[in-house]
Image 1 (cartoon, rainbow, N blue to C red):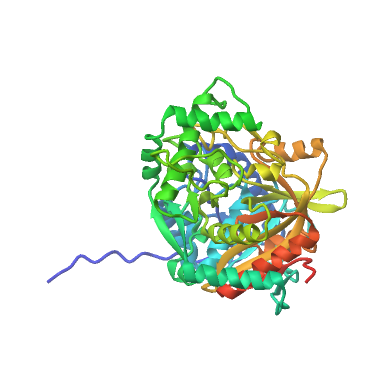
Image 2 (image 1 turned 90 degrees about the horizontal axis):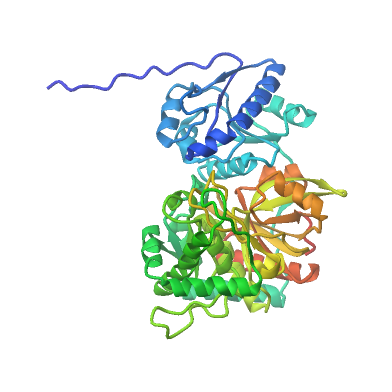
Length: 543
């Protein structure tokens, strides 16, 4: 019998002293169009730096004149692009934007040559956030790679690191700010952490996930085999169920939630143009989502919940962000069961892990239990590690999340405001829960997968009190609609943090003062250690 055999694919060979570049982008055409000029500039900067080192640059795929950009914008396109790239060639992923990692993961998993991820040090588009997501995803996948960043690749540090990679195929960064958790002394805090860990493993908890996997964040999915030994189990839910439940919420119920927020002082910055401004109708739908999310969480007995947002529902309803910020706050509008007989999750925060990031889910759940047991405000949130610059002698990070934080982080609802989400990302709009995070002491952390194990980096820091004009400058340099935190991480330089951090997100929670922050960190580290995670202290942690 004769069979039709597939044609043997001719694998191209790598040219001598030539770097291949690829550009991974968004799945939303408006975002790719808007960000393309910034990407072109970064590619030109990288090309100039590589050529100055005596190498050539060859772009791995063409610019599409009909689409108006040269980004890889789907997984299928990424697979086809990598079919034409020599598997042994030095490869640079040039990233000036948010990118969907799954679009290049197939090619990067099988690529045999050295891989470098490069981003521009800028806040206008989230290239740094994209780089951190991709490095975290490759770390989880056990794919060797290096990372590098620069404003325009004219500085000596970046060019020396680039030369190091061209010569050796890798870059060694300084990560001396990280140390493994030492043996903790017996204390009330360490005892609390261990007791809460045992309770979690014995009694177990459920995290509700509205459609697993969001915006290419492979790093944000923790396999059940790693998650379940912690006592944490997933309830996998469909966002269609959320939309269906929203349809059962009455207009009066939604109006009551909105009126509660108005009475609490939340500043809704309404306009009349639905396409570009926040409207009352958009917020009304968000209030229905808030009620629906609590009722479904009650139905399934959830201990934490995550709504995917953006791609999952961007064409169906307004953004989920306002809902997310409300859930994470203890003080929030009351919601009754469908029959009106009881208040749901009354007087407590229901931890919400934005963008269904399961590393955040574990962290938020643990944080909520520790801070509640210690009698502290458990309001916690993730932030994108967006950008940063020095101010008055210290490096101040711009931590900024797409749309909402708990109102208590801003000092209350009366110090918070709601603006329309950017039309480029959210065609149906929806309000944020924004503000400037109040000055104070924080504990920050990140749960991530490395070497097929769960790890957590944890440290303390503070939120700087910057002048209003500097805050506005930073907002204007990023996304002025979104909440901002001026985070300072003592004992960690900009480049150390970027070299080590294995996520596009960092988890933050306030403590009353620096001394209490350290006590909270001890309890949290003890809990994670008892659960079996590899715990790493980062920066100045006075234990």
